[in-house]
Length: 50
Image (cartoon, rainbow, N blue to C red; front, side):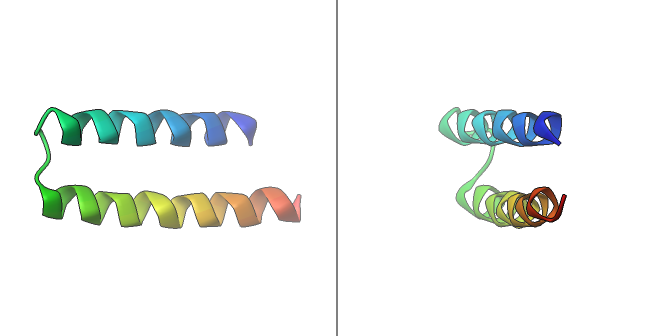
């Protein structure tokens, strides 16, 4: 589980960099950020349940 949390944090960093470097436009960044936030909520609930 800790590996999944670390991987999710790494993904967040990569997404911020991609947006900063303009590889993603605002709409793409907003969409993927919402998806990653949902993954974080699911992972948090899963970790809490364990």
